[in-house]
Length: 204
Image 1: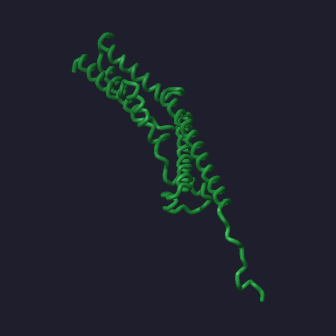
Image 2: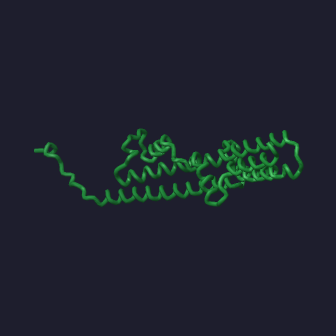
Image 3: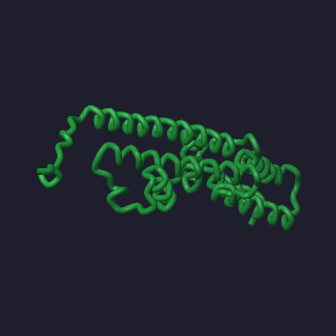
């Protein structure tokens, strides 16, 4: 394989690995990559645990997870918001402590970079001949840095998701609290039956 053929193949591989070029495309890829962490659907077990706390009930029934009344719907929404907030906090903490696993995009970039480096070591060419490969390596390094460095694109997205989760939790709590207050007001205004003594309690 000639140097031009190698460079062409490397450019094609890099183009596939670095994903879409447009801002909407990059945002979609980043969102999909993080969907298994900060923005994933809350774990059902975590939601049930939070719902048990909110309802002050140690046992959650299927009916609690499929509420038919507004009070139950708001309690479930709050439980989901609490679970989502915990997931967002853990995802950001894992990234900032270096415990987060690299995303699929980062894995692809590293594999492509390794292939290019292997070929450069095997192929002895002029500076002009290897320049395209070196350009691709620099491009891969920039994209990977955005994915892994503090303050990079992924870090900014994780922090944004945490802010959104906190806002969602606050709104869910406010709605749940307002529903409880409405129910309490309705109960206080409901007519009460007179507490007449039973016939058996009337002395003769």
